[in-house]
Image (tube, rainbow, N blue to C red; front, side, top):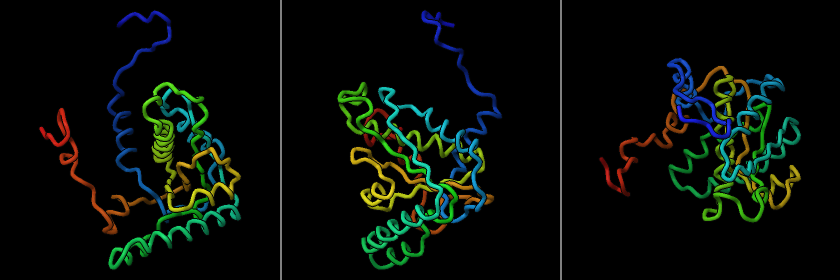
Length: 228
């Protein structure tokens, strides 16, 4: 083992086969949940574990730009659902013919059914005017916040909690409902709740919207479009 001059490094290595299998299982069976939520409230200690997992996400420049707004009250969730409904009707009209019919048949949120919603935000000012690692890509703080969402999602899967990501709304409406400052960017509205069933494949694949692309078509070697 290489010497650790500052005493801050710890031994690293592969997980045990069972631990490794559990990580891959969480990844492979994670689903975007819309309608399978159970009404039982989530215990505070479980929510704390999920938020802890999210907060341990990597962030460029260690700026940790995220905040998490927990929404449990039915009245608030109803107002958000109405904002979704307005935007969803606009979205439906962007499709035509058979695609619009199929779009309207899909359930795309669980705002009223899930007992908890979490609005995940990004404070793009948190690291100051110049952020290590964001100097040449201004979106890195948003990407970091998405890592926090994924951490929470995988931890939720391990806990038997379903998560649904809602993105169909006008940000200004959600900011007004929650009192979010203008300079804060909303990254995700997440619906959370216990589930006892999940789709074996992504719901949009099951319902014929799109199918998973073959991985081999997406991997290039040493340059764009060059396949091994």
